[in-house]
Length: 115
Image (cartoon, rainbow, N blue to C red):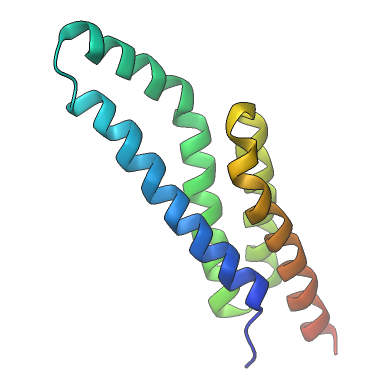
């Protein structure tokens, strides 16, 4: 079975971005030196948490869609990337490549299954 290259690339980018988000914002809480830094890190993490959750879930669905060739998973991942971008609009530029690649990959998987 042929894999969608766009979905695989999107999944890899999603995994890298998810690891970055979790390590960076997890490190702001645990790596804080003073109480003020810890409070600032906690507030930043609280603001970004919905974005993080959407992106991690999108990455999971995107990866499943890429490796199982399931268009439903690919579409769910693409939609969750869009929601994650809208939830924290300041980081949407990091998510746009995954959004585009996911929708392109969804179209390719859907086309392969219809033939």
